[in-house]
Image (cartoon, rainbow, N blue to C red; front, side, top):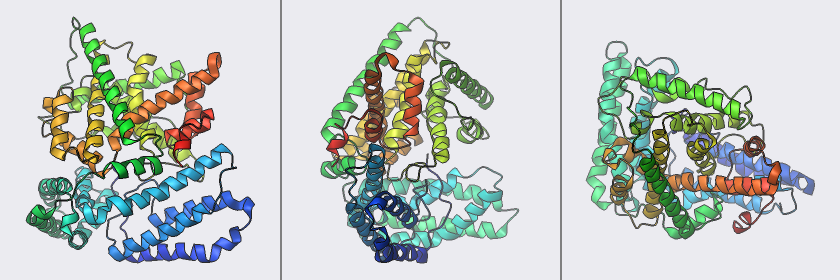
Length: 544
């Protein structure tokens, strides 16, 4: 889930952070000369890097107001970080500390990939149009409190931000047409949002009405500029196979190449489609599930699903449940129960309106509980989510795995057999998205090719055709390289880890113990967790 930026990036603060980093290397390094302090050096490098980048669990840190000179300065500082990291010899450290070393290395490499390959400040208009997209997500009338303050600040900043965008995007031949298409669509859709804001503020805040009008005008000007120059935006949107492989090895810490991933995802796609068809045949004489017909029915069904999941996990002792693992703060915020019941629902509700347990297993047991674990983690390097999608195979792969694996553990036993079909339908939609990711970034498919493939191959694909959900998912994986591939292969990695660990334990294997140890590793790449939990280094040895 994307988090709306909460702080504005001050231009002066960028230089201050970079100067802080240069000062760190010029002054502080001699104090770390003692070999026994190498791990402390690693921790301090990590902390200073996070200070420079502004990352603290939210990689969207603020409005993208940096100019070319500031971005270049960050790149120079990054090189100094990487040079300092290479002076640390971690080869004789305990495995857990070597894992920490490679987490820091991956994070530095993630920023390198952004500077060297994707260069979103100069190549992706969505870097700027995202702001209106996120602004729309915050709207829940009446707007008040902290939400109102954030909206006011964002409206105030938009004219300058969009002028800044045109300067950074001036080399239009570097901009991929598909990325321009995504940004244009968001800017066009923002018109209705600005009208809603103006109507909301019309009778209570004249200043906000004026800010909304100016922001809407700036939105229109950026939209017109993109449309005017669109024919010049001819770059390829995919990063290409060579850079994709570099990203896999050096940032995602994946022990696979593009070719190997394609095979893994295709095999998983084959499996879930076949299992779905077998479930349909098995249930051919069973009544189909009637979807809920109102917001009240949906809310009730979700509430029951959450209660069932909590009871199931406690009864079956799937993993330990510390006091902080509760649905509190999740139930209302995620589902949008306060919004009116629409005349037409987006694609994914085709699943959750029939059987919400898979969605709640993914979002609550997977993501919500992971977030709580991350917040309660006190490790100096492993606390919380990681930027640059370093955590994605772990977080999305695990959440995705829960949908099916908890089914085999029994959480759907009391439901109609038709519920099992939905588990595989959801899985199949994810595998087609993963294949879209792989082929778009190899530049074999365009955005349009990928969307047509999803409509033709996803279960109930006709509901996807030109849907907001499909646009969102394709933007997610085209702009966030590897996102859906990471989800599918992360699930495969989790099952491989469980297999290897259970084989080592033999008759002493206990699911609860395995899961608890898995969670203790933190939200880090699966290959590192497997190394730490099993001692097997066949995967990590491919990473350096």
